[in-house]
Amino acid sequence: MQSEYTIDELARAAETTVRSVRVYHERGLLPSPEVRGRIGYYRPNHLERLQTISRLLSRGMKLNGIRELLDAWDRGDGLADVLGVSEPPPTVNEPVAAQPDPAADDPLADLPDYVKQALAASSDPLEAYRVANPRCGDLAARLIEAGVPDATAFGIVERLRADCDTIADRYAGELFYCLAGRSYEKSERTAKDLARLESDLAIARLIVTRAAGELIDQAFARNAELPGRGVRSAASESAGGTAGVSRPR
Image (cartoon, rainbow, N blue to C red):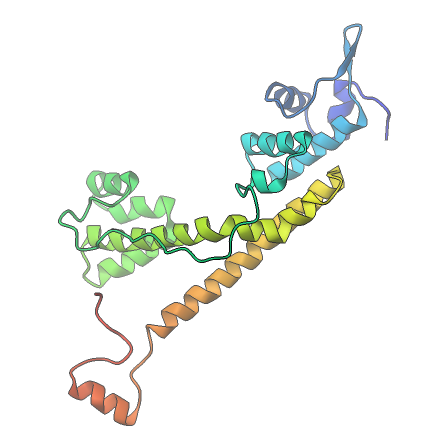
């Protein structure tokens, strides 16, 4: 590794462009070079910073988010602050905020603006809804095919989304801090440590989303049991109901 680089040499070494280097400097992601005469000279730490920016960009992070992370790193802040967890969170469960009553007088009142616009502006609002939420759109489509009115179908899906957001808001910071942030805080915060943090966060997200998906699947399965055999089935039929599948309350 060279001891110093001109901007052209730095861009080549980092496999990026001179324009990108200038943009990163203008956006506050890259420290200023040492200027001698009219030429700026960059050090190996500039190259490491550029490589870190490239890795984070390849993982889908935006420049503002990268700058926030790098600024925290330069200040020596704990990763818990970056993740929104100022200290290890308590383990006591807090009650989940009550969701709006699905039987509200106005079926559109609790829908997000983009859903209201889709319902109002298109002869096929489902298609507009799928653009932003493909899988949620599939669920809404099946509800509509089952005879549920458009606004009611979208309302059900949005309440499901709100509950998922509540779960993520309650647990994401704590889980990501425990699985990735804590070890980074104890590190020397070198470029290698930051690269490991990226990998740890990606793995943590995969593990957490798979676990959450499994729990949600099991919870829905408990409410979608088929009618039992024999006495249980006969008792259910005589009562005029279907075991395991009930009407919404």
